[in-house]
Amino acid sequence: MGLATRPGPPKKGNLMDRIRIRGGNKLNGVIDISGAKNAALPLMIIPLLTPETVTLHNVPRLVDALRLQRILQNHGVDITTAGKRAGQAGGAGETLRISAKTIVDTTAPYDLVSKMRASFWVLGPLIARMGEAKVSLPGGCAIGTRPVDMHLQAMEKLGAECVIDQGYVIAKAKKGLKGGHISFAKVSVGATHAALMAAVLAHGETIIENAATEPEITDVAECLVKMGAKIEGIGTRTLHITGVTSLHGAEHTVIADRIETGTYAMVAGMTGGDVTLRGARPDTLEDVILTLRRAGIDITTTNEGMRIKRNGSDILPVDVTTDPYPGFPTDLQAQFMGLMTKAKGKSHIRETIFENRFMHVQELARLGADIHLHGDMAEVRGVAKLTGADVMATDLRASVSLVIAGLAAEGETMLHRVYHLDRGFEDLEGKLSGVGADVTRIAGA
Ligand code: EPZ
Image (cartoon, rainbow, N blue to C red; front, side, top):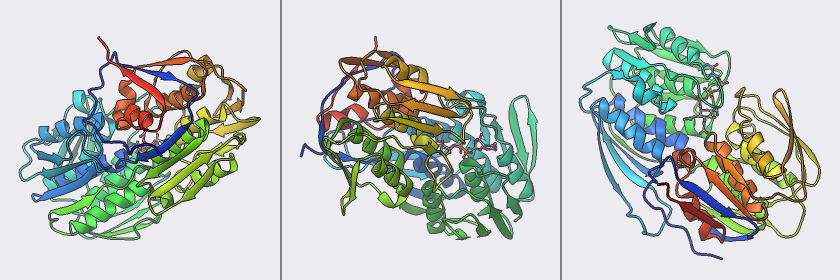
């Protein structure tokens, strides 16, 4: 077994940084799983609902988390950090003490929201606590158009008046929000967060039907309950909320990142070897674990987390369709495609959540992958050999699929636009080097 990895400070995400991968090494050892980005971001937003301090442990050191800190500071939120210093052992991330004692500004400007979509989620808490909010529309992004219509419908059901003016959502509920019946036409993580964050302080009862059940929603709901919110049905498609007049401070530890876990499971499955993912929560990845087992990867769940092994056996082709939780996550689709490029046969990967989440296909092809797109379905014919090349990251998960393929490719792969990775993978090169991969960050000029 190799040494446990150690958390370092968040990378600056220099536009010109590259990652060089020399493929072919089997990986052995322990990787510590970080706190989930997609839980940490909404958890950092909910302190807007209370004048008291919320303490979050295990916040991953990521560019997105830093960016959100700046956005929250713009609203007047005080954030202090107390975490392990770089080089200290253990997988725990940072501890943030977040205090929104006084909200000085209810506007979230375009230049901040456009850099990170999740910051749009300040809308719900700002209306709930302040009775007004002016938040820039986030705009589209590489993986799709990503509208926010359901967020606005939810706010309106809770009694807010929303207008769109010059690219901003201007929402008002001068007499406060009131409980309502929200029934989402489709499952949305963001719209569920928005509805939940607003309903906890609304007068009366709210029912949210067709709610997202992603573990990150559950983590946020559990923190809200610690803050005094009344929520029933957590983890199910129907949430019942009884509004309270105020919330108080709380202390909460961010759940382990299931997407980072699934990614490293696919890395180890691709390279072969024996890797323990310490701190992983296998109960949040059941569909992924079943899929990887069908692909010939040996996964055992242990007290520590998960152990991933593949020694000599082939990678088998498996068909996958992305779906809201508990289905196969869209955030692991690109990585799974990376794995399937070396499978012994043909697999089909269907993306049902985002209409444009196949940007990695062209880049995987540069490494020798054989992939054909048919609408929302990719047909992947496994190849015997991938060969290193220069490739370019287009979004967070797409870029890590190139790392997976690069680790199995012959020769050298140079991954450009590494800043995408820095948004969502804490110390990727440190974690991979710690288990024997030849992965080096080359600082940009
Ligand atoms: C969250 O995005 C995640 N982001 C995404 O993570 C993830 O891919 C996605 O959920 C799906 O699991 C964070 O948690 C910060 P959605 P979100 O609303 O909430 C449509 C990553 O790599 N929709 O669940 O924005 C939407 O277009 C990422 O970490 C509407 O039509 O996703 C999509 O087709 C990127 N109207 C579907 O719903 C709306 O008002 C699901 O999107 C809202 C969404």
